[in-house]
Image 1: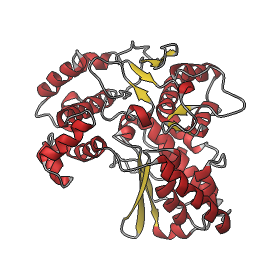
Image 2: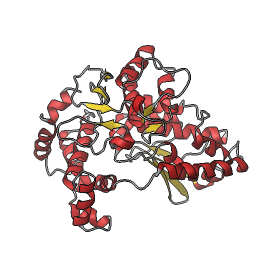
Image 3: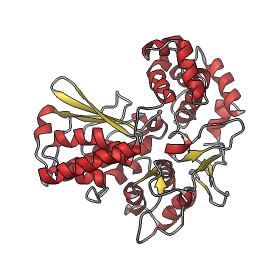
Length: 403
């Protein structure tokens, strides 16, 4: 819910659940029935290995009705990389396209119109069809970084790796309006964090794995060789067997973190980009500034910011609106008014976020219910069970049995 890929206008989803004004596309996807939101003609099922029945119904925007400059649309390069990976069978590819409500035949010429939500559905269907929990990382590291958008033209025109990261940080919203890359100092090194908005990566870890792989591949392609990486981290590393991610990405992985992030030595920022072109970059950034203005990629919504502040606090107990408002420099009343203008409330944001994360945690059968209750800020397992029955209509155990 709140931690889904985002809201209708710029995340590519709508929802027909009773009383729901937000989009709901949250993990786990197994067995979910998905429908095109215009006319209801596009349908598909994401089948898990157990072939579970649909639990949550969601809608994807019918991309055929969207103008080419609609902010929800993203370049098709990632989607094509996922679908074109050598491990993907024709049957798996067809299942992924059907699940996303797209044509079963990839267009040979012209762009494949899709949103970030479609990418998630495609990737998670492929992971399920191939029975490979690490397929996201495999597809990401195999991505052809030279299939260029305006942003990648910029990156490959930069002088140094550090300049590349700065360009991504500024211009990523040109192609993915709510996506962010942030860098921070870390004791002689630089930490790079990836944020695709509103808890999206936490709810869809395989999509985050793909992003991590694609970023590592892009850096190596730009430098023309290995890039020293101190470590990478992914969401919920326990879902991956030890050594798997290290083998795929060729980087050490920190299993004590649950963020999509990486750290590189500060000296790596001075590595030269093989295709640097200062004159071309000057023209590209001027055009990028125009595109940024057109995109109007402003700050995240109030709901996004509230979710971001709630997430790290949940395991210590659900924070009250007073605490979150204080962090935002607002009074509780002002925060409430801002959320109301977005059609929400503090309680709704908290409940939506907990429900989304609960479904993600329940997909990990090795995670005890008592620990899930703790992670979500409940005093005990009983409180979690009561809340989950209110959200879903059945117990956490019953939900887990269907996965």
